[in-house]
Length: 516
Figure 1: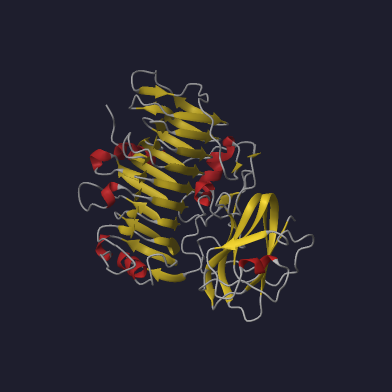
Figure 2: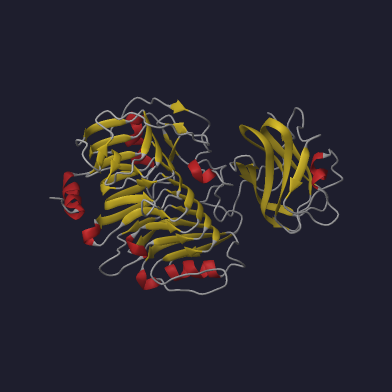
C-alpha cells in the first residue's frame, strides 16, 4: 500500500541530514556557461529573461504590499523589482486593484503582467500556505524565496495546491534558488510544487529544492495539452517526492546536474511525445527514475553521464514502462544555448552547497566547485543597479559595423539607424522615447565578442540595456551607460542594442562591433 509522504517525511527527519556524495570532477563543457549567477537555460531564449531589470526597486513585507507594487506601476509592463522580506501569508495578503495589475486575495497573482522580479532579501522571504500564480505573463524572475505547504483542499487553500504555477500563454520565466516544500501528497491536500500548462514556454528552474511532496511538477495538464515546453531543470534537489520529477507531456526539456533522492514511485515521466535530454544527474535511493508511466502514449529521452545509486527498476507492464535498468537513448535533442556540465559524481555535493533559498545565490563553475555570483553580473538580485562598463578604451581591431546594415524598432524625428554604423560621431540615432532598439546586421554570419557604445553630445544617460543575438534571442550582455562591453564570442547575422531604461533621450552616435 502507498504510504503517505508525511509518514516518510517523519522517517526522513529521524534518519538525519543528507550525507553528500563526492567524486572526481569530470566536467564536460559543451559551450561557455552564463556568467556566475546569471540566467541560464531556455529562459535565455526568445529574447531572454531579465525580469524587472532597469526599473524601480521597492521593498515589501506583506502580500498586499507586493500587489500594491504591481498596481502602482505606470503600466502592466513597466519594469519593477520587488524585494521581499518576512513571512507572506493569507493574513497579510489582500486583493489590490489597478490598471497595471490583476490580483487576488488567496495567492500572489502575476496575471497579465510582464517585466517583474520577486526576490527574497535580508533575513529571507517565506510564502507560507500561499502560492505564486503566473498567468498570461512574460519576463518574470522569482529568486531566493521559500514557498511551502500550499493546499488545494483543507484550510486555507491557495493556487490550486501548487507552490508555483504557470498557465495560459506564459513566456520567459526564470525561477532560481528557491525552496518549494509540501508536507504530504494529494490525500493531505497538496498538489504540485512547480507546474506549467496551457502554452507555457521558455522556463528555467535552477539551483532549487523541491521536497516532501507527492508531486514534483508537470509540463502539460493532460495528454492533449502539448503546447508547453522549452524548459530547463538544472542543479536542483528533488527529495522525498512520489512522482512527477517532472512529468512531461509534449515539448522539450533539458534536465541536467540534478540530485534526485528518494523518488518513491517514479521520477522523470516523459510521455505524450515529450522529448527530454537527461545529462549528468545523480539518482539515489529511488525507484523507476526515468520512463513513460501511467499512459500508453510514449515519450522519449536522450541520456548520458547519469549515475544510478541504489535505484530499483520495475518490470515493464501495460502503461508502466521504466527506461531501466540500463537506460539508453531513444531520441536526440538539440540544445540551442551554451551550458557546462558538472561530473555526475560530484552533483550531490555541489547541489547541497548551492540549491535552495538562503544559500547566498551560489552557483557551480562547471568543475564541481561552488562559487559566489559574479559581482559584475547585474542579475535579478539587484536589477536596479545594472553593470556599467564605464569609460574604457575602445577595442583594438576592425570595427565590423562599418559598411554593415542597420535597423531598429523606433527612431526620433531627424535621426537615422544608419548613423550608428557610419563612423561619424557627429550623427546619431535616438529612439522615439527613452527606450528602443537599434541593430547592426550583416549578409552572412559574423563573429562578435565585443561592442563599443558611443554617445553623441547632449545625449541622455542609458540606465539599462541588453545586447541580444537577434538570430536566437539570446542575451549576450547587459549593462548601463556607454563604453565597451565584452562577452563570449557569438556567430550571428544581427546584433541588437535594446535600451530598457534611460534618463532623457539617448543619442547613440556609434554602435561599434568587434571580433575580439
